[in-house]
Each structure stands twice: as structure tokens, then as C-alpha cells.
Image (cartoon, rainbow, N blue to C red; front, side, top):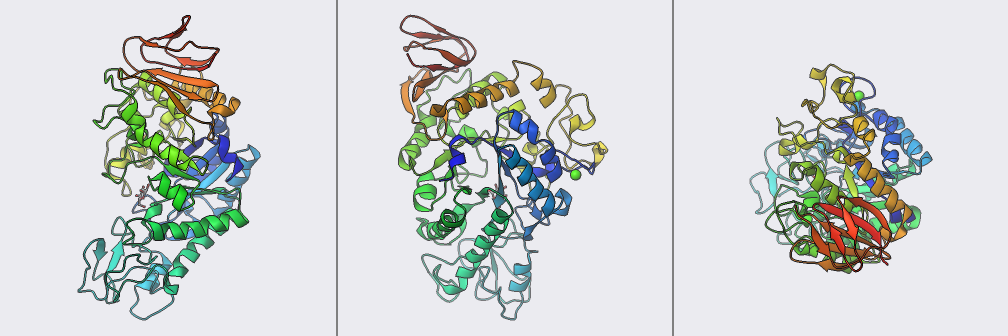
Length: 512
Ligand code: GLC
Ligand code: CA
């Protein structure tokens, strides 16, 4: 287990929209490097970058054309190696996005695979027997090449599925077993991609659709066996490198497949992902809402259940949101966000913040860009400084920007929030400081529910420290007296044997 994960707190960056260092209207790698001190200053010590590889950008870079080359619009490979180096100087780690399930239809492997003549890449993708046969289940494309067959898709039409074989074979005339030598080469390629970036200073990977590799693999045992090969490689040659999966089933991802972390998401229920809100009540009422008055039970059930199953083997990663979810500020107001972030940064595991959530950047519904569709509204440029053109994101003409910045007069900005002691940004910074100061609050520390009543008071214990919440718009009684108060938002007053929690209050304190 990489030691640095014990106190890691991640910041996710959508490279298109973070900071434009060369005035061409789109964010870039050097822009991220220039902003490392900002990120570090907030107490984040690890970064996840969304795909920054060569791509036709039909799915914002999740359609990879070349796994080993940085997209020119973001800079060069050397720029990225330099980002690794500058991050390490500051004791920070950087992970990249690994997209193993599919490539772009412009990837060299696919261009070869679709040729009618047999070649090294013919079996790298999943092809049906003939162009007239579209097997049931899965998505297929037919008639787009001279090869007589349909190819399987994983997501958009531009993303053909790489071939990792099948577990349960229903038609041996075109399905290969996942143990077949012919498909073993596909995963070997992915291992080589991982080695390449790790050898250049990268610290690990967020793995896109990690559970999608082997087809007809309902229990995911075959897919897990591939990832165990990856984990064995890491344990042997890169013991400090980490992998976090987009799997959304921590017991499978961590216990079966060997990932270090798994995201808590519910994206397989529908394409609207919920991010942090997924640990909420089933009726779609956020626990943090002033007026919902719901118990935290339902919200924490899935998390606690998974936590018990993976304890000691890996970590659950709860997120503020990501590039696929609506911004968390879409459903929670500033005061509710303060409570949500207090929880996010005091739970066990490895938390992830999406850029801009520290200042409550807004979800801005708008025209789709690069396959974003409803997700585009969460991908707008970072808001640095209210007094600068384009809020400090870029010096380009605003009409040339990748996406328009939030143009409302009250658009939240990082610099102005940094100057305001009561801002959300400073709350995030304080909570990160607290987490660094007290190992009880970090990834490995235990978690025990002390109070979880049906009127929405929640208190959990992390070693010698307790964290309590009252999201309601009226005060409530916590039947525990506080020791030293370490942090509060709202107002918590200790009495002899209980604590009075004001409306919309979260408090972190030492147990007596
Ligand atoms: C993941 C990514 C998403 C992408 C999809 C296909 O869910 O987070 O952005 O579109 O995979 O690669
Ligand atoms: Ca740029």
C-alpha cells in the first residue's frame, strides 16, 4: 500500500478549464504547474488529471488516440514530466486518467484492426463474425470499414471496445475466452502504458470504467483477475504507485481486483451521477439540506457497509463531484456545503475534490462541448480573480475560450474568497489542515457512529475525535459533551453533559 495515501486529499483537474498559460483560450499543463502553490495552499496534496493525451476529443479525451503522447493543445510530454517534478518538490503526487476499456476509432491499433487483412491488431477489438450479424446485447457499429464484421462499442460511437475476451462464452465462433493468448496482448499493452508514465514520474492512475474490460463477466471475476496482474506489477516494481477505480463497488474493486481505492458513485443506475450526494437518502433529499430533516442513516448505509468489507485492504474515495456530475452547489447552498465538506474531509478513506468546488462554482446548463452534453455545465473555466478578464482563467478574447466563464456578477472567485476568513475556500483549507494534524482523521482511522437519530443529528467518532452535525434550520441536542473544540461551522455550545448544536452546524471536537 502506498504510504502517501494515508493522508492524501485529492484535487481533480479538468485540464481544458483550469488555467490557460499561453493565452490560446484553453487550459494547459503548464497552467496547472503554475497553480500548484494555490492547490497546495488549500491543503490538497495530490492531483488527478482528466485525460490529457492525443485525442479527437469526441468525449473530452476519453477517446484516446495515443496513450503515450500529450495532446498538443495541452503542451508536450516534457511539460507533463515537469509538472510531476514540480509537484514532487512540493510533496504532492499526480495521477493520470487511464482509459483501458476503449480507444478512439482514430487510434493506430483500431485503424489496423479494421483492415480486412489479418494483422497483429485484428483481435485487439471485439468484432462479430460478419457485418450482417449484430449479436444481442452490447452496442455495435457496422459497415464503417472493409473488414467484414461489426465492432463493439463501450460508450460513444467513436469509442470501440478493446478486446479482453469473454468470461461466459455464449458463441465461440466470435467470442474469445479472457484466458486466450490472443487477447492477453491487449492487457499487456495497458501494462506498458502504465509503466511508461510511472517511469516518467507519474504516481498512479484513476482507471476509467475499470470493471468494463472482460465481457459477459457478471460477477466481474475475470476482469478482476486482469487488475490483479496490474497490482502485482505495481507491488513488485512501483510499490508507491496507486490505482483508484471507477468501479463503484469497493468490495469487488479492492478485495477482488486489488485496487487501492474505489469511488463511491452510483452511475450504473442512470447516467446522472450523484457524486457526494449519492450517500444521501433514497428519496433524493440531501441529508445536508436545511429543510429535509432526514436521518443520516440511509445516506451512510452503503458507505459503512462497504467500509466494513474493505477495512485494512484499501480505501473508499468519496468525491465532492466530478466532471460527470452536476456541481455539488447545484443542490446545496453555501451553508449546506460547509456541512457537506466537513463530512467529506473527516471520513476515513481518500477524499477527492473537483476543481472549483472549494469556491462553490456553479453548474451552468449550456450547449454541449466535446461529448459533454449535460456534463458540460460542470466543466467551465476555473474562476481565479474577479478583477481580471475572464476571471483570470485566460488572457484570450472571451469568444475564443474553450467554454465561457460564469458571467454573473456574483460568480465566486478564488482570490476574493482567500481574502475572506469566512469563505468556503478557507473552510476547506482549515479542514485540510486539521486532517493533516490529526492522524485519527486520516484514511486509516476507524469510524464509529455515536449518534444517528431520526431527526437528523449525526455524530461519529474517529479515534479520540468526534464530528457532529445538525443540518436543520433549528437547534438540536447532541447527548454528548464536548472536550476541546477543534473546528466549527455554525454554533456549538457545550453544557455539562450535552452539546447544543445551533441550526446548520458541524463541529469537530476531542472527546472528553
Ligand atoms: C467515464 C468518464 C466519462 C467518460 C466515460 C467513457 O465514466 O468519467 O467522462 O465519458 O467514462 O470513457
Ligand atoms: Ca493554453
